[in-house]
Every structure is written in C-alpha cells, then in structure tokens.
Length: 497
RNA sequence: CGGGGUGUGGCUCAGUUUGGUAGAGCGCACGGUUCGGGACCGUGAGGUCGGCGGUUCAAAUCCGCCCACCCCGACCA
Image (cartoon, rainbow, N blue to C red; front, side):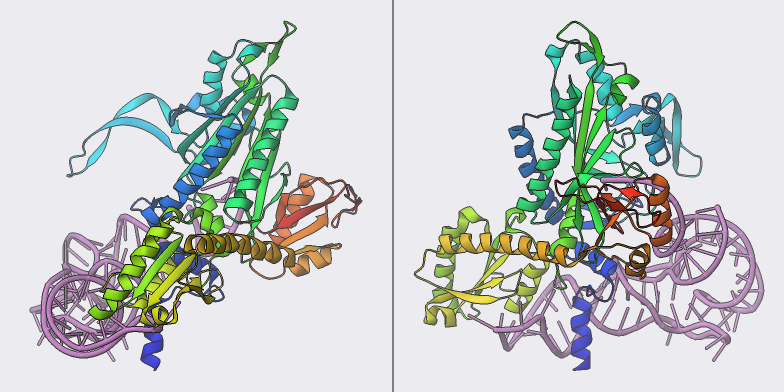
C-alpha cells in the first residue's frame, strides 16, 4: 500500500497546495510544453507548447488584419546609439540588453574558441523594436498622405533577465509588436485603445481568461510611453499577471528620430505613435488560470487536440467490434480536431492520465460495455465529470456543443474566482493585513493619491503595486489610504508576477 | 555583486561523518502475464562520482585550488 502510494506520487506533479511554483514548473515540463536550454535563462518551446503559441498567433493575427494591420519584419540587431536617443527608453532597457561586440571565432590556444574581430560599433539584440522601426518610419513618412502606418511584426526579443521562469520571464521570448504612426494624437490614442480591446477579447474569448483593462501608473508604464494600457489577469495563487500592453507613445519617438510630416494645412508636425505587444507569457497566464493538479487544462478554442478517443479493447474479438465504431466516430469528428489513441502498449488508465496531463478538453471512451449499452462515455477535462452520449446521436453536434460548454465554463469559473478574490480596502492597516502573508492576495481596490512616492512606499512595505487604473462613469472619489490626500477613484493593487 | 547550498547512470537522490569491488527508485530496452483510472514479474543496458592537483597500499569519501548550477536580497512582456 505504502509502496503503491509512493509510486503514484512519483508520477504525479507537485500539488498546487503544496508548492504552487513547483507545480507550475513540473506541469510545464511534464506536459512537454517547454524544457530548459543549455543556455541559462533560455527555454526550448516543445511541440506541445509551440502548438499553443501557433494557435494564439493565428487567432491574434486574424484580429490584427481585421483592424487594418499588416505584418513586416525588422532586424534583431540594433545600433547601440539608437537606444540612447530616447532618454526614458534607454533608462528602461540599458541594463538588460544583450550586446554583440565581436564577429568570428578563432582558436584560443587551449582547444576552445574565442571571439575574433571586434566590431567598430557594438550592436544590441532588440529588447523591443521602437528605435529601429522609427528610424525606418523617418525615411518612409513625408506627408499626412503616408499616414497612418499600421505594421505588426512577429519576432523574438532578448532581455537579459537575472531571474527567469519558463514562459513568464526568459531571456529570449517570442512576441508580436505592433508599431503604428499617426497624424493626430487622438487617432493614436484611439489605436492604442482599439488594440487593448483586441487583447481583451482575445484573452476572454479564446483563452477564457478574464482581464481587467485600464492603464498603468507612472512607475509601471513602459519606458518611453506617454500612457501604457494593459490587460491584467489573476492567477490561481492570487497574483496579478500582466498579459498584454498597448502604449500611446505620443511624439516621443518621432522627436528622438526626427520624424515629421507635412500636415493637411501645410504645417510640419511630429508623428504620433503607438506600440502594443503580447508574448509567450500568455501561455504562462493560461496555465496559471485554468490548470489543476492533474496537469494542463486547455480552453477548447486553443487546444490542438480537442477530443481524444480511447478505445478499450484488448482482446482481438473486442477490437473487432470496437475499432470500426471508433473509426466511424473519428471520421465524424475529424473537423473538430480529434485524435484516436489506440496504442496497444499502454493501458486505458495510463492514457487517461496522459491526455489529462496534456490538457485535452474532452475524452471519449468506448469499450464493449459501452457498445452493449448503446452509448459512448464522455469525460470532461475541466470538471472531471463523466457522462454518456447515445451512439445513435449526432456526435459532431453533441461534441461541438460540449466543447462550447467547456470553453464557457472555464471562463465563468475564472470570473467567479476573480470576484471572490477582489475586494475594496479602505484603510492602510487593513491593506497591510491582507498582504501580511507571503504570496498573492488577490486584487485590492483602494484609493491612492496618484503619486509615485506613495506607490513606492506601498510596494516597499507590502510588496503590492498598482496593477491597473480603470476609469468608469460611476467612480467615487475618496482619500488615499496612506496619505489621506484626495483620490478620484479606486485603483487596483496586487502582488504581481 | 553580498549571504546560503548542491555537484554521483536520462531524472530524483542515498553513500562522504568513520577511505576498502559504485547503489536505490523512476525512466529506458527485451521477454512474458496484464489492460473500464498512471499494471506486474523477470532479464538487461547505462556512471571518467563537476574538473585539476595532493595525501594514501587504496579516494565518491580526506586536503588544496578551480569550474558549474541552484536558492535568497534591486528591475522587467
């Protein structure tokens, strides 16, 4: 008994209640989403994880096109002096840039290799592409008739982080970055807000992850932005996770790269800019929103395999009657993303556990007993519930409806979780009390005087930061919980990833 | 960079205190019995014990130096 228990534990991933961060790492590796690379701080995205990214990318790419954007590609090497042009931008990224200083290798005399020729001017590996893109926009934009420019690129970027975690923070990651140029501030702000709304829709409708939308405080905004909008999600361990950002950059980069245009009334003005991005961090947010102690839980709309069919038939005589029905079902469900796991070398129990670990939303089990009863057994990944569908039914319609139900159910569950973990806090004592223990404490809505000084103090004393500022019609003024100064509205605080 | 720790088959680790033929579990391969919730039995492959040097008849174990990685303190999609 004890031996059996220990053996099972070795196969299971670490339960969330025991160690949430180990659970996450276990899950990512065991579900074969990603693996550590020989270069510290970098990760290998394995086929299961990359399939998820491809599905996200395809959905987002379609939404970008619908909103008038085109894809392009800019180089990953950027002249060092470009970064220095915009004061805040350089301050924000200088410390974490990877820098290329040499080309070529030569023997080092000890059997290894060493860099050979030093470059005349070092190059940085893009931490983001505003600078090189605005350099190019400067050459492309002459008049208002060249505007707007609405470009997106899918790319990798490098930020030399000291503390890394798979998907959430790695030294190289994949993302998309939109960079737009406009003739007026209003148009640019509208663009930034439109893309924020695209991100909100993607997070909620595809990932089934509810997000708060709004903008960042001065301390939290992007280096070089006038205003940073964001979508902010809540993880199961009650921390905030920034899942996407959209920036109104004003004329900061146009000034830095001297990008002016001739206006309709024959004046000259600097061009207005936006940039917006989401990254492979979305995969981390997705995992932390829905998955459980058995492994990954995927929303059907993003799952590569939406349904797996497990035939239960060991003996030849059972296979002879079960497999034709399984093949028939697979054909009916082909357009939905179905996979048949008829591998004779593993047991049904093993298959159940394996597909649950990988997050397949629905599993159909068909054995002799089902056939005799005239039904097929259906197991839902989100709830673990098993039910049956009559064999005569329109399987595709039933399964499709179930998948929609799972998608909606995941979202509803996450919305309820967020509601349970969001509270209004009206005194600093209560605020500190709620954040008294290690780990996440959910979203705290409190009045704040809007100063960076107070925000810094709160962060130092409690570990929480302003995650998002949301303006609404029914905002009620109050007083800052720390200084007592007037506050126009509550803002949302949390400990963050 | 400051403090703490660990390096032993693919993975998790025991063995080091007290030197004496390198081990376990998982995984892997093969064979058989199994298969409605991670099957079992048997057989087998796989390790310069992080590196270099020293002490010793003998070093995973003791000594010295070096290297690597992990954890904790300031920023970040």
